[in-house]
Length: 132
Image (cartoon, rainbow, N blue to C red; front, side):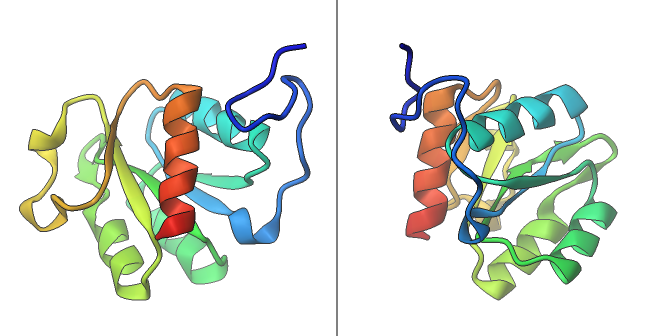
């Protein structure tokens, strides 16, 4: 039997725990679904927002333990979402296909992961969020 990086048999999922609810802000729908699926395989529930307006709406109505933010969201960036998360003390990470150079100076200390995300990268993201 094959296992994922946190010891759960592949194809089997632990039920999501409410304290493990992560916001995914990603404009590429397939990438967002893949990230959510990797999180679900680790027992972590996620909600997806494809842009800033939806992400801010979800932050207003839902409690999150952390977030995964794609830096570039088409014609906008995720920095307004990062600002709210930082103000609330909610840990987050950036994901990008372009490297650290695209991240705003004020957020250089925030962990960044390169797209496409692997299962190991998502496990590291969960660890960052839980230690944040």
